[in-house]
Length: 586
DNA sequence: CAGTGAGCGAGCTTCCGCTTGACTT
Image (tube, rainbow, N blue to C red):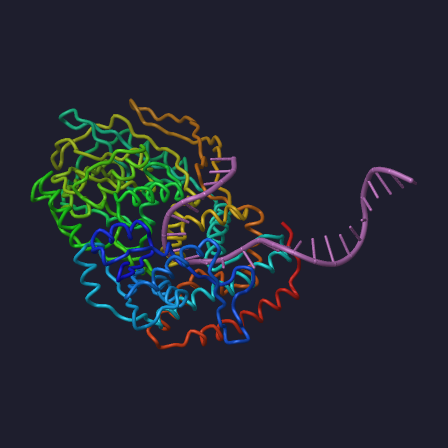
């Protein structure tokens, strides 16, 4: 019989902690929340000042029964759930549902899963923070009121089984509005001029004109001017530049990088990461924190020293930028930094490798570059050509990790070392061409870029990004699709061997891969909600109510007052819309 | 007369966030 029952949220975490504590401690997990508002009805007694009606869902009955039994037999129950709003609420629900007494219950938190941190936490117990719990209840009840009052209106006015909510409806709105921007986008073309020069030393130098021409006539006129021109280096400038590594992974940045580098969907990435976590290979994968523990930084710097040498080390502490981050966990990193790779499924090996590299790189020195900018003037024109080159002087973190960018569109920029040149040196133009280029519409969202946008707006949480993306597709608001592009003609005018010639080439444009498109239903519902519930659909709605939740957590505001203030006008709108608005078709 | 179909009524759908594992495709 254990004297102590120690409860955490995750089974994998329980296993780790069990190893730190002696046999006087039984470590169990709640497997997340153990109680929730009743599912079949509103679950909030509005007449009774928003009293929540909680139940233990069927799939949690067994675990609650087991914990209850163990709690009865223990002298002390340690509530060691996560250190955030939801974690505090889980502790409170455990306290209530297990029928614990204040005397034998202790609430503890820690920000690192190490033996010393756990023991330190045990030395410093506290009581449940009811203000923080109330902030969670406010969050929970508000989401229920919004979701369960608006969804039935959609069943009546649009079609059955649809849904609306604080998070999903705004996610769909983003996609609908982006699609409309794209539909209204008028592509314009202009002529980009590039040149291939030869230096006196017969080396090749690519450069781009500092001006684009709006019309074919202007572009042709410019090339005609170049026909008789002499070219020379009018300015040569070198300046140092630096690149810094990115922060370690959070849920959202991991989803983005795995999407860009390997093409994984956000659900796929999470499934693979979950597996790595359960096997003790990485830290928790649902996090908004970029923080690394002291132990992790120590291990990382040891590895960097051993592999690359002292001067590649640069210890960095990253700050979380995203709104509403709760930072109950560390960044996503390997559990042991000296484990450079793993055996297993190819997908798991690749994701682990990515996480290892990103973490190591985050503690490495800046890359030092030297940027060279060459200005080339033509004797017959005011415009100048610019050639840029970049040389890596010191690799730093680039030795390990290279972040993939969203837009890899710079096809013909010359990166790397430029040939040796002097100011005033004459150049010969081997070829100058003006290519018609079209402006691009804003990009459609991918799953990962939608998650990034939601995170920037403070909407949704690491544990809900993947489910939200799946919900809006399941409801038929959004589809993820490939689209084939269309052929488009474009003009190319070239000056070569003293003569200017024009030709028409074709390119494929508008092809899309795994992008999110709104459906008709998605657009109808979005327009309906925007017209009738503009406050809920506002991109800043979540950020605003989060401020209110913070005030509740600080004990400045009563959560029921917030509900009263929100519900009165909200419910009036709901009644009005239910009664007066037209049935929508789509 | 038997089978069809119009018309009616009852019952269902739904939120966000925390955590896995069971289940299908």
